[in-house]
View (tube, helix red, strand yellow):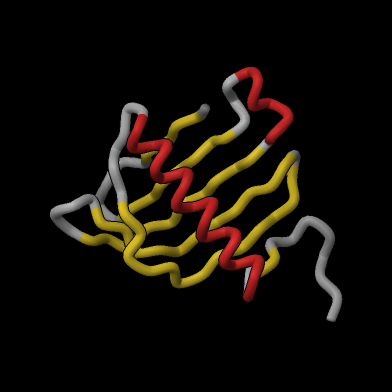
Length: 104
């Protein structure tokens, strides 16, 4: 089965498990900085798109400690920019909340 070049690829198996580790570590780093603090309750789906780096998109249920919400999380990784402090960009879109965006 062929895919379009640059199209998002659904993640399964080992790739999905690796992506879940990336999601958890990114949320931990977010919480260690200026926040907010989120915990993953459930990952519904995850995709990876190769762009200038990789763009992982997750459909998840997140908890902020007092309530759970359905959210979309995007993590754009550009490892070669890490020395400049801009190697990771995370955006979190949750229902009825403002978009959270942080870069480090």
